[in-house]
Image 1 (cartoon, rainbow, N blue to C red):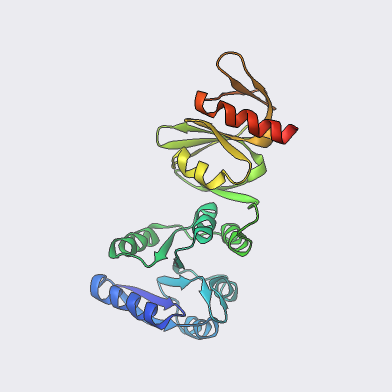
Image 2: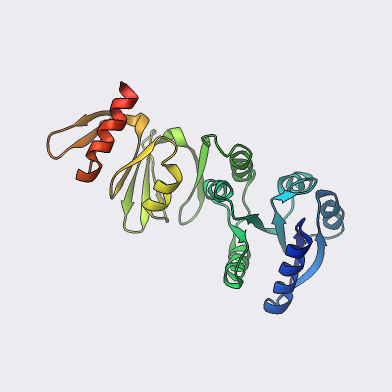
Length: 249
């Protein structure tokens, strides 16, 4: 039997989640609920659950305030957030799992399975999440990359390029490191295209700051500052030339 505490400021949403757990997840016993940071602190001081369902936005603060009050909390955390594009992006940058409101029974079941298996996010990943949520329009400084056996945090400026490898992505960094991540190139292209990264080919995503020249011969390719070359697809050629003209004009 696993224990759970739900922290959610909307009474209806709290009861809905509690009911879902009682009806569909008999292995989980809800031992407490709270609708604010203050209430949550009181509940968590008495007992630490196996799983903590944590809403991000609370009436008197945020879920992060609770994590700062209890920095050594060992509960597995399932973050619950409203369907907001900036929130989703922040969770992806931090490589932290979440469940979106309104969620389906399947979403909840998957989140619980992931929570049972997950390694707790460290302070740096929570910091990335908090900062990206706090400044939704700003360019995030860092991204968490989920490899097969660990999570590596890198600065966006340190990424030279990304290359598709079937349904995985290889990240090439300024210091020569290559990091293999178990997500598709499209996943990262969608995340990074607002932050000076451009998908120049079906298999290649490039940091615009790392380009030294566009070479028009041999079908067109990019010369990077680290001397590597990257092909440019025919349909992307005019867009690449226009962006580089704008950057260096």
